[in-house]
Length: 168
Image 1 (cartoon, helix red, strand yellow):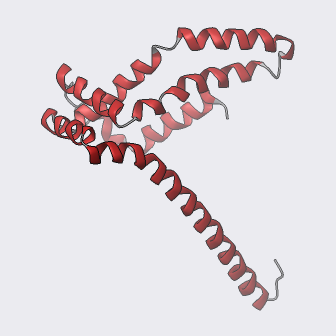
Image 2 (cartoon, helix red, strand yellow; image 1 turned 90 degrees about the vertical axis):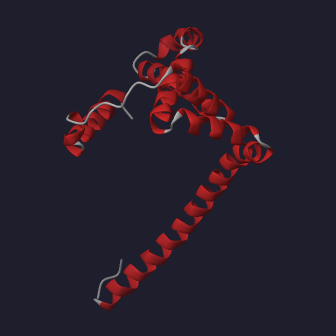
Image 3 (cartoon, rainbow, N blue to C red; image 1 turned 135 degrees about the vertical axis):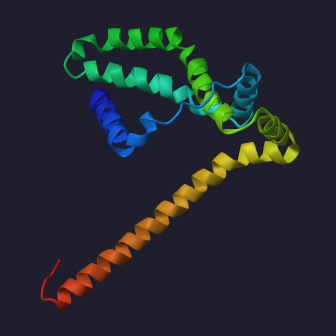
């Protein structure tokens, strides 16, 4: 996947799909205390751990764009990638702030405090620990179900087309 064309397509989709958004008023900038609550909520929920692979992934993606045309530079490109991972370590905090801004715009400070209190409770801690596992297992089951359903639909298509004199 090429990053630049992907970003262009995403920008075009936003421009075409949401023409009224340009006229909409931008959400108010949240207070520093709301942002702090939102950051705490994201960290407590384990959401910030999802950001870790993004920085490394972009660095790896860019490195791998150079390797096919410059295989002789593979070792040096790896060295640069290691350096950039260290240099860009602070980008995770930047991303956390971006996501925290969204939370702080969607939830009041009081609601964020309630959510933080919940996730600090035993039930909230369990939710934070078990939810990613439940989502992962749920997605695996959904994929297995979709695969079985796809096979069933494939069979039905073949049966119906056979009735029409076609072997698929």
